[in-house]
Amino acid sequence: METLVQTKPWWVYVLRCRDNSFYCGITKDMERRLGQHNAGKGARYTRGRGPVEVLHSWTVPAREVALRQERAFKALSRAKKILFLKELNPGC
Image (cartoon, rainbow, N blue to C red; front, side, top):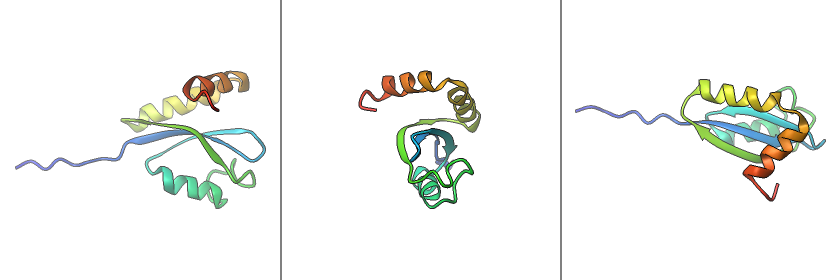
């Protein structure tokens, strides 16, 4: 009998920092990663910019896909990031 291994999906997420800047990252555990960011133990960028809030997050099937989407978001201008986020979440 074959055993199916359940793997966690990768998350791509966008945070708003206390200084109103955006941070985009990837993780396999959103709750843990958000806790790290808010505890000042996450990415260097978010240290000192907390607390942070999740503006939007989505799952993807593979790390490579997550990395490509993170890179694409980071390459956008701030105005285009705002438009992107508003399209995904009109209340943003």
